[in-house]
Length: 195
Image 1 (tube, rainbow, N blue to C red):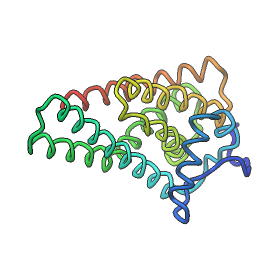
Image 2: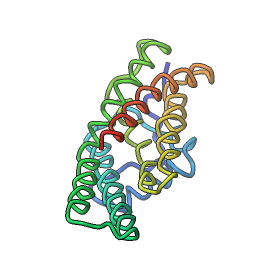
Image 3: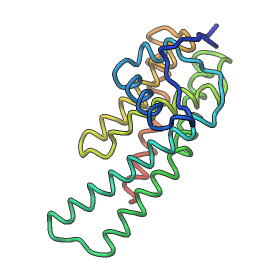
Image 4: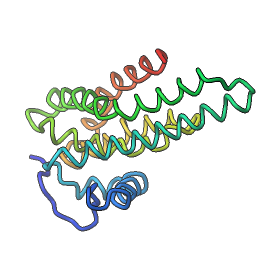
């Protein structure tokens, strides 16, 4: 019923042997050719590398977000020790909690898949799809662009991934993507407003 394994040399996977090069290849594939990336994507596989990829993207994004926050405060002449501590702490929390956030998002998408597609998929498969979609959040630190990056990652890329892996129709893909995206986006807005 769905695409378990279609080996291809065109689909980059995050690798611990070459973390920077493989992460850039995944991000490039997800951002610039997501249909090809997910068409040839192997849903079954280990979770270690995707989780570490999410952690790496979260660390880079958290660091860049902290730099932007500090530069913004500095440009307005309001940079204090508290601002530095707050920016560093928020960046660190974003990095460390990114794999957890992807796991929570995976739960919402798996529930939507099981509801609208049927008893297909597993947590591991959906986590792998979501982890690589999370690569788009490398742009999250850019003001205004960040909101579009979240939408692109958790609606468009997840939709493409679900459609490609589970061979869903267009309408089913849209329903599943929206059903997963709404709680994920709501949770992100809630967490962002707390900080």
